[in-house]
Length: 456
Image 1 (spheres, rainbow, N blue to C red):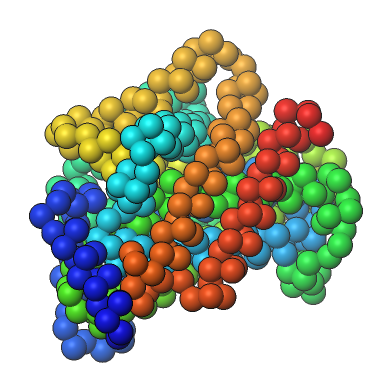
Image 2: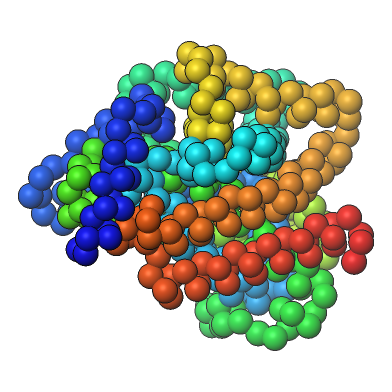
């Protein structure tokens, strides 16, 4: 390592010493065995990736993916693949930023911008967290209604208090949270894998769908759904979350080999779990194609999907109440796992941007109240009109599209910064790929927003 890199790292290590740490109650709480073999070390680093992955398969993505299959069969699988590769790139950068600097993305933005800019970015990010929670709360509440016949408003209130579950889990240790989220993800995978097997998709056409075609750009309805899939895939809160929970493993930052090892195994965990998210999103689209392509079914709501899976006129002989119930269980698992990570992200953002000092239980409760209040107001106002309530999902995804560049651009800038990152700064090809991906995402999201509001 040259002298410039040494000086950069000395400065970095000095700046992180003695300050409050991101998610301080779990930061560096998991010991990493020294001199252990590959598999034992990987198991130690396995877990944060599952928390990241749920953001890429939350209820906000479901209808878009299934509708993509229902309308265009397997042709949009290539979009799911490209979106997943972009997610892997940005998340690897977020985790590397946290491991190397000992700070999360919110802390670095606060330190490296003016106070006014910092407050503006905090408000945008806080609204993005609220938008994320909207999809998760509504998805969970609808699942409770479908499974247990609980009224939607009651389901929203019940879901809002699952923050208390997170408080209990934090006392039991971060590994427990990782294990529970991983289990919920496993439930989602198994449910949709089972349903896809029953649907008997055309395997040859399915694999051909992963090859991009020019139709995606030239066919306007297909382009719109493409934008919906890509625009809703990379969640801004996941970039903040990734930069923080990558620090839960105890790493000696004065030892570059330790840092390099942590980055290596964290990336393996992240890529494995994001591959699982890719499989889930693929299964959703394949399910839509195999069951609903050519049926002219209305699939605009979760209730529509639930009913269609038990309707033999729509899905044929495999239709059954069990199929519908499994869908609802997977929806509940998705909503609950996403809610846990959304609440953690809210804490990271509050602590990072404004250095909020208050008891953890109060902080988490405040985070949840900020996000659930507009949902409850909306649900009460449109009581009995679930279609209107589910429309809130669409607007939540649109706002996430607005917030994305405010997280992605600083992330690429900071990981490009050799003074900050030393030898762990982005390689040239990584930097080029990241900037291209970020610019493309921003352009697509702007186009999606204009389309959504009928401007284009």
